[in-house]
Image 1 (cartoon, rainbow, N blue to C red):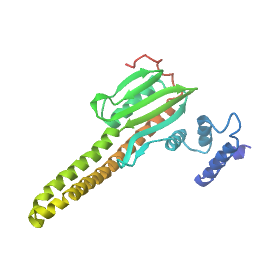
Image 2 (cartoon, helix red, strand yellow; image 1 turned 30 degrees about the horizontal axis):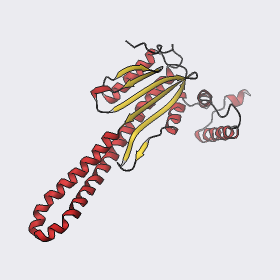
Image 3 (cartoon, helix red, strand yellow; image 1 turned 90 degrees about the vertical axis):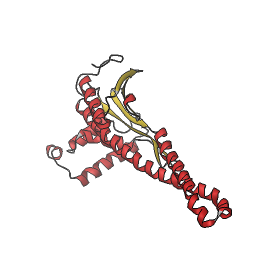
Image 4 (tube, helix red, strand yellow; image 1 turned 30 degrees about the vertical axis):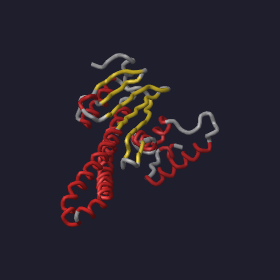
Length: 245
């Protein structure tokens, strides 16, 4: 009915409707066409008065696996991945590259491999940030990731070495206070304690640093999805192997 089509739902009602949609989708898992596609979800969101780009953001937040290595205090890899209907134009890709350049402060490098377009931070920075753009079944896959194992190990390792060094310096006043015989008994515990304390400080430092990087990539990935959604109806991207100007 026309009246129902024009009705506006508040956020609570919209949440219940989408939850019901998800429930119905779960019940249809045995069907060959189970669930809803991204395009269908975007249509539902648009009918409820939400921007289509919000669906891209939500789907990206639900599918962002990362390796969280507890040994180092934080993740050693960040990855954000989502699909957008349609293919991006070359102009849209350039806008996406510009967003990455502004966020990371590096020009970056663009290449083609296996039918996918790859953007990497390049040699201008030590950060291993990569964006992969690939067409899959009428949609475009966007994957933004950063590999950080070396940075994580360096943070904790430097902390441990610094703690060991401080423990060595502490031996000088302790020798005067305790005497050499007692100090000899404390050397090993002192060094171990210093190294562990430094390692703990390094882990805490990496936890904060990796959280900052995660927030940065999350923001730029949201910008990428907005640009991709806005430009999905434009002309298709250049064929694989053809470099942008």
